[in-house]
Amino acid sequence: MSRIIRVGGAQLGPLQKSEDRKIAIDRMISLLGQAHADDCQLVVFPELALTTFFPRWNMDDAREIDSYFESEMPNEATKPLFDRAKEHGVAISFGYAEIAEENGVRHHYNTSIIVDKTGHIVGKYRKTHLPGHGEFDPERAFQHLEKKYFEVGNTGFRVWRFMDGIMGMCICNDRRWPETYRVMGLQGVEMVLLGFNTPAANSQRTDEPPGLRNFHNDLSVQAGAYQNGTWVVAIAKAGTEDGHELLGGSAIVHPSGQIVARAKTLDDELIVADCDLDECNFYKETIFDFDRHRRIEHYGLITEQTGVVRPD
Image (cartoon, rainbow, N blue to C red; front, top):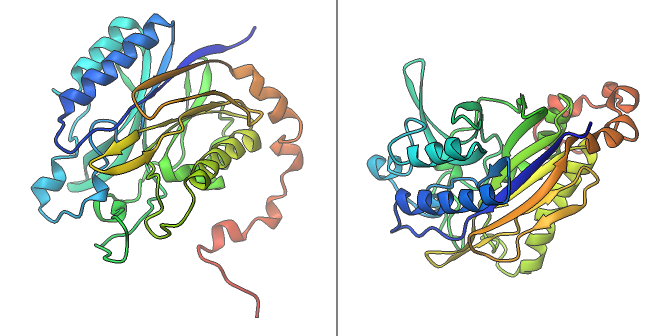
């Protein structure tokens, strides 16, 4: 019997610096309502869905920085979203900036969660591959200070048995690294939930054609899906935030690597696909049957070194 999940990808248009969480939550609830009306069982929202993409701003005041973070989830601002998802009986996933107290130490993470249809958090992932830089860089066209505001996540690439399948999460820049998908693939992942906020311009290469960034986005998620026989639901924040353009390009990708649904705008938009998890099986049992074909005795460098070491 097919294991079909009707998935809604809830792309968000821009959130300005002046707009508060209520505006974001109201828009997310509206998209959730559209998804419910279209019989979606799972709705995926972007990375840092509750605020503007604040790493573009250079801030040093700790209170200002912390104003973009959540110390509990759900909280007063997000409870209406959890309540509406429970009312509709729809599972959701979204990203936010998290303050976590661990062993008496305060940490800042870029986080994503899976919430079941009863409103309970069943999975949490913290971003591993932080892009950008850790200090203000006057040479950049704009800042990308994720390394300043976030710590490298400590969850690893876990998967969860959820909605009759095996699901995992990653966030934005994680999608560009093949290890992200492979670690989940080795756990049998059948659907990767991926939120992103990607600038439409390259701050270090301003003459880069806009189409190339879209190409790299598609290439990353399609390759990850195909090479691991998994669905990938890649959902963006899009449009112009405070004069800075975000890429958009939300897509739902089949285990074959083909895009089966794609956003057409740079605004709030719902894309929908019926995702049959059993369609992962062909790829997992043939060309990407890891048990038969992988040769780990030759892969040591992947975990033995970080940077490039060239031959003499």
